[in-house]
Image 1: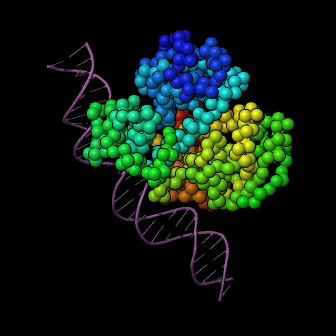
Image 2: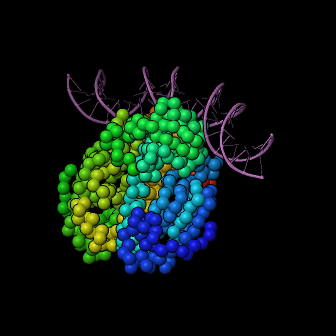
Image 3: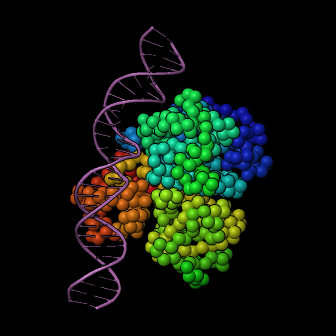
Length: 240
Length: 240
DNA sequence: CGCCTGTTTGATCTACCTCAACTGCTGTGG
DNA sequence: CCACAGCAGTTGAGGTAGATCAAACAGGCG
């Protein structure tokens, strides 16, 4: 939870994808003054479910899982957030979901009160936030289809397809940011079923598993078809 | 699909909950000029999945299901929209989900292009839209928990709890806007399982079923506990 | 080398699905 | 006023995908 004040916005790795990407150089100077960095080790809770929200901001590096845990321990991951994604619920006092770092995370944060003031005075910030939230909403609904209607195999195929797209998989080998357990909590399955589906896809020659945290996609087209979304041609719609 | 131009904003039933609710009287006059009403019979498709979006706006009356259909016919309802809710995806050309009227619907619509221009010149419109989308996002994630982790019984109990809250159920008797089939598509179940859970809840004395489209909640507390959300005390968090 | 944690594999169980028949409305026509 | 489609919903019987319980396995690390 170290606090850093270093790092100029114009050298920021997420400069043109994050919530600040529509901001003018002048507005950026303003943000520069009030932002602060914070690092979280894997497993750290960035915000707790039901806790008051004091800060919000962008992921600079690392991966965060947004999740809800029911009282009997059942857990559902409701969002997987990557660098440039926004964390925090503006305009509400309590966090409806907890955010947990699944690998080392650096956040670029703003005090919530101040950020909300900025939303009023800085329309480009509000506009970008709106766009990002609309995209998040589409993604969440995409995942509702997956959770409600897809088979275990389709779920895993969709997950791998989504990951390879979002991690900008030039090469065919993905490094999985999530453990089997976290994957199962994202897909609404058990850890054993996820594991079985991995080996199944491997046996079918669709993927290779160099180690448990890596996946090499051998047959991208097959994977896309297994994901159960509309016809393979049209299936570029899948966001997430 | 009749077109109406009648109806002044200041007499509008959704005046202070819809996207226009933050607009000043002057801004309202502007909206008044470009808005138009449109009616849809039950079953009508308001927007089709993948179709270009030409108009968007608010539900004045009626209920709309937002859904995705997979090529083999499996269907998932990803949102249940009530009066004052906003329909349409600003800032994108194609609708990612279809919107279907489940009972007679009246929409208050704006040409998409014009609406997007207004978003720029009318900050109170954009602000309200942002707030609504943030709420929708929370709801969608709430539903992800339901779809991924809840049992059939918990799903139905959650559904009834959510409905009674959103329909402002003063009285304990709800009129269900959805058929058993639509409910099953919303809950990620089959129609038979939904039906069995209804009779189960009835046999357990939690609800009464005066007819298949009505539910009388006899034991609200029991229903809330069956819904599987956090402790009954804290469970006011459940939105949707 | 042996422990610990994450993953895989196996055997069995069960919640929910599938297939099928039945019930009860509602409307239509004789 | 009754007969009878036609549809939405319910109920039943049986099957199965995925859960659960349990054990083996593999890699990192003291």
